[in-house]
Image (tube, rainbow, N blue to C red; front, top):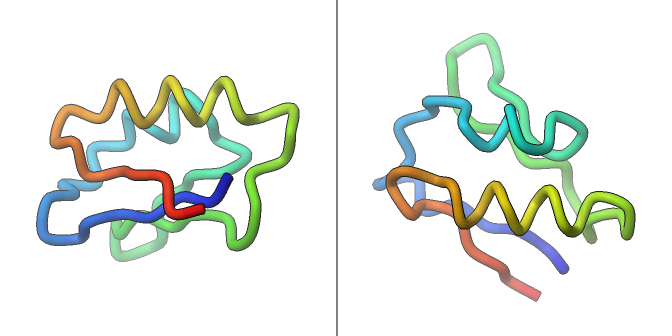
Length: 63
């Protein structure tokens, strides 16, 4: 599982960071940063919850 973000929808409100801080973060400019590559197996459930919990539906699975 890999994650993508539609930057035109993302408001960087950090809901996803709350669900999976090992995968999502905000940079100094308050832009969403997603850990590159496949989501670690122990984070799949948290990332799935983050995708479902995104208030702007900006997150999606890419692979």
